[in-house]
Image (cartoon, rainbow, N blue to C red; front, side):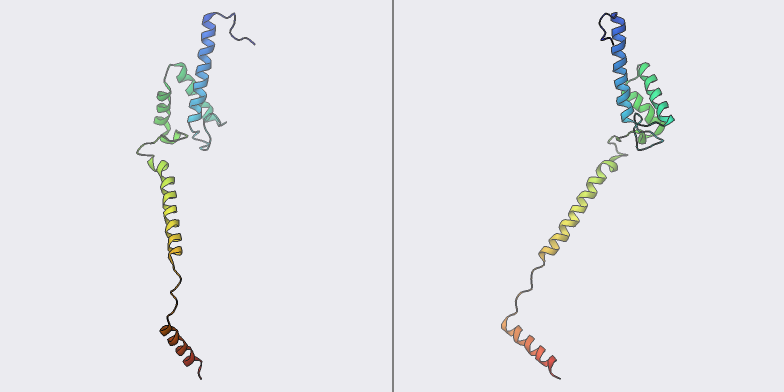
Length: 144
């Protein structure tokens, strides 16, 4: 409808402020995990608790809280699990480094196995003395 033209400066500022708050709300809701669904963000979830969490985000934004303060509030309430992408901390380092460490170990094992298989050389050919001894043993074995 309107693009803000002809609106008073206070109303235009209020609309701009609301759009900024809405953008922050969506960003924050996208960073937080729905603790009921666990595989969805708060913005994606239709669970009643996710709706409550979105309402709390909105209320805290209107109260002037920073994004960090709001995230800290939810972390104190639900623990670090509430982060959809957990932050890199001492308590979450295994979540971040674990997959890379397992992949590196797997590659090292694969490399070692392949190297061992490739390192197996063909046996050296028999010299004349060894061939003669083998013929002698085979001849003795084939005699009744």
